[in-house]
Image 1 (cartoon, helix red, strand yellow):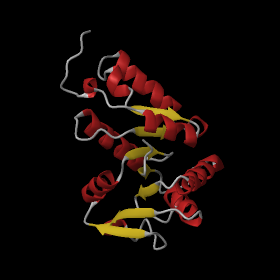
Image 2 (image 1 turned 90 degrees about the horizontal axis):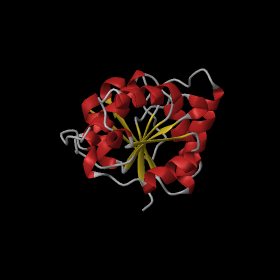
Image 3 (image 1 turned 120 degrees about the vertical axis):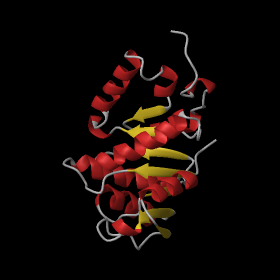
Image 4 (image 1 turned 135 degrees about the vertical axis):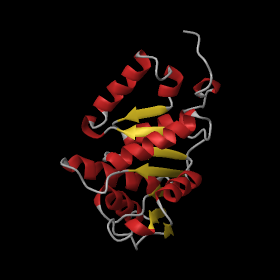
Length: 195
């Protein structure tokens, strides 16, 4: 079943490579064209602003969730379908997760990684069974992916848990992978594997 509401984690900066902005714009347009509601952190700056602007310009629906304390520094986007102002970061992440049927990480910094890993941990613990993906623009996430494979090799993460996170350089392929992904009973953290 196609996803109709996806949370995008991404940087409050645009990064060093113009390809990151191009990918954020493309993703926003694809969301609009496929009637996928964009859920994101509510900022008007960086890749956050780029993906939101592209989606809105293409006639899409965008819901931003931003903490009051960051509304000024991240410049809360006033041109969205809806901007929700919440009490703090925990409320922001919980609300984004509540509204989303899946999660995609564009390039970003510490906040992007923290949001991705938290929602992935929630999935590992069985708090949700929503697909997750990395949009690997120009190999941005290739080193991270190698490290995640290393975690599997060292038996800190099981292969079933690793497989919860899809990865592609193509936004359309990533959406297809995420739509086709099925949760496995073996992804739960407490379940022991036969090794």
